[in-house]
Image (tube, rainbow, N blue to C red; front, side, top):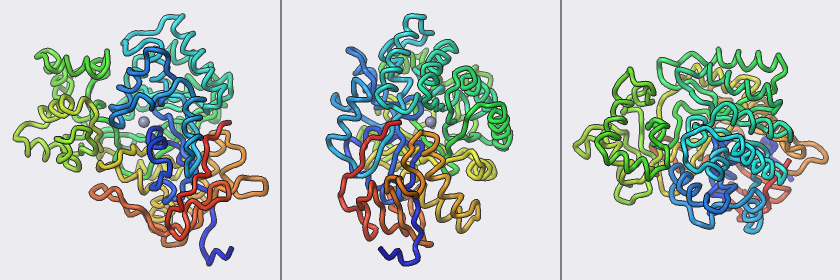
Length: 483
Ligand SMILES: [Zn+2]
C-alpha cells in the first residue's frame, strides 16, 4: 500500500494497564486500538481476575470491584487457562498478555487475613503461581501498598519471587512506597530480584508529593547500579503529572484487614473513624496518608458505582465536600460508605522534571496504567498515553527522537515480556503495525478524558486491519499471547 508520507511502526504495547475486566466486556477496546496499541499487559499491581479456588471467588470479586467497579460471578476465573479461554472464545481486536496478581494468590490461600503466611500457605501460593506460569502467564505482579498484597512478609515475597524466577518469568512490582520511602522500597524490590534471578519491571516509577520531588534521578541511579551488578530490571511510566487509584489508597492498609465490608463496619464505629482521622490529619501518625502530602484539592473523584454519587465525578474533594456542606475528611468517609469502596480518584502529585527524567531514561518503557471504567471520568491516560508520547512529548517538547519514542512503546516491552515475534518490524515477525502521521495528538484531558486521539490512520493486528481511515473496523484478530 502507499503510506503517503506517514510513519509505519510496530504496534504499540501498553506495558502496564488494568484492562483485565474490560477486555471481557468490550473486546473491541476502541480507545486502545485508536491509539495504535496492539497489545495490552494486564494483571498489574497485584490485581488479576484469576486464580481462584472454591471459596475465594467472592473475595476476589469484592477486592477487584474496589478498583474497577462491580464484578460478575462469571468474571473471575479458576486459572490463567480459564481466563485465556474466555478471552479467546469471544475474540478481541488486540492481543493481551497477563501477569498473575499476588492478591488473587493470597486471597485463595489466606483470604483477607492480615498476617504472615505459614510455611504451608507459602507453599500453596507457590504451587498455585507455578501452575499459572506454566499455563502461559508472563509473570507475577506485586502491589505492596494494596492489601492483601501489602500484608506479605519478606519470606512470602521471596518464595513467590523464587517460583517466578525459576520459570524465567517477570516479577513486576508496584513497590511499597512512591513517597518518602521510595528509595528503600526500590531496595526491597531489587533484593527480591537479586535472590530470585527473575527479570524485573518496576511499575510506574514516580516520586509523589512535593516533599519527595527530585528523587527520581536517585532512583534511576539505583536501578542503573543494579543493572551493573547483574540484576535485570527496567521500569514503566505514563506521561502525565497525575496518578490514579482507588480512594481506599488514602486509608491505612491495616484498616483493610478482613476486606471492604470489615472496613465499612469499622468506620461506622467511633473508634474506626477516629483511627482513620488520625492517619489523615495527625502528621505524627505511624502511617501517613497521601492526602497530608498533596492536599484534598489535588484529589479528584474520577469514578463511582453508586448512581447517587455520580454527580461528584470530576470534582476535587474540596469542591465536592463543599457542595455537601461538610469537611473533605467527612466527605471521604461518606464516599467509602455509600460507594462501598468502589470510588476511583485522580491525584495531582508529580513533578515535571522527575517525569521527564523517568520517561527519557534508557530503562523506561511506556505503560498507560489506565483504569478503564466506562461512563466515568477516568484519568486521560487511558485514552491518550501513546499519541501523547509520539506527538506532544516527542514533536513539541523534544523529549526524545521519534525512533526512541517508538522503541519505548514497542521493542522495550516486547523484550521484557518475552514476546519474541512482536515489537519490531522484520521478516518473520507478526504484522502488528500502526500507521500514523506527523499530526499525531492526544486529545483526552482531565476535564474531558474520553476523547480519542487524532493522526492515527491504520492499525493492524496479525496483518488484519482493526483501524482503517481512523475508524475501528470491528475485526477481532487479537488473542492472548504467552511466552
Ligand atoms: Zn500500580
